[in-house]
Image (tube, rainbow, N blue to C red; front, side):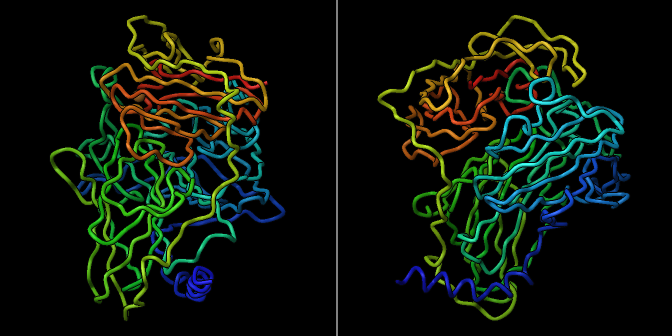
Length: 465
Ligand SMILES: [Cu+2]
């Protein structure tokens, strides 16, 4: 069987892959016994050329006293237990949300809804078994604009033995920073921008570096795991070498699709295979083509004698076990994403931006508050539902659902429907049908992942009982 032959061939190159696992940064895999120590703490990072080091918020694994790079990549195994003990060494409450992982509600990291705040000096044990493989990420769900804005966005890789082995794997954590020329943080948002598309950062990075360069084997197949973890920016990715999309938001495409350009909103991920050029020193550019001034996100430089891989050797990846909704019996629920004039922003231990601009089904709610509003809908465990979502604004919104993965059945703005997802980048005036099986009990947040939108009203939650 040719596919098996190719896979075997690729597995034989695992040693090469290990030596080229650049850009992975500090990686960690859960042991079987003691939980990983994940310490939320302050660190410093050189983010502005000519400026001072920036005092960032991040996590360190174990005893690393002064973390200075991007948060550790957390490596997990599909179907294998994973455990971390979060210790809060910050000076304000925090939590960890595991974006895209379909895990028990008590592990979801939403203060007041699924757990208590983790106060400074306190710890919280997260333990779960990831049911799906792919590229995910983690971030706090408390004072989110500040904590994420100041550094707390990390990538999760859930591995599976079903994965083909590539000649190299490069993980890219894409985000901006709102910094002045001196390297200090400036105001996290502008109200007039929060009421529109969101406030952009001033410094653009991949893995906390500006346009970093990575080495990869010439003529080899490189798996890029890209996570858009910025609080605002929507990327339009382009790559100037043969490349194909393997998975979006952790879920495999039935067949790899040649990459033209790809929009990636906050919270979204893409697994892309790039076929490196054959010549030593040849450079591949990964760019952001959105807007009128394209710029370089990162580059890959070819090293060594060409491995002469065939791009068709890659993929498709194995599908995750996402339930198939019964559309005929599904109850249909409208879901309107709108602006609002009603002001409801109150105070919260997890911070308030002081404004209300947005609403879901006419209810504005910032989330992470001690007085949650009524759920958007109460779903019956095991039943199928179709959400008729409508973006009644002129802006794009990456709408994220915690704890579940949904299928995009139809859209008035798309010709190609993406694989199942936890985050739909809803285009201006888009109307779509989202279907799911309510197979994970609990209260699950549904919110825009442009954090200014989330925290000024574009939040809600579903209750599954
Ligand atoms: Cu939004």
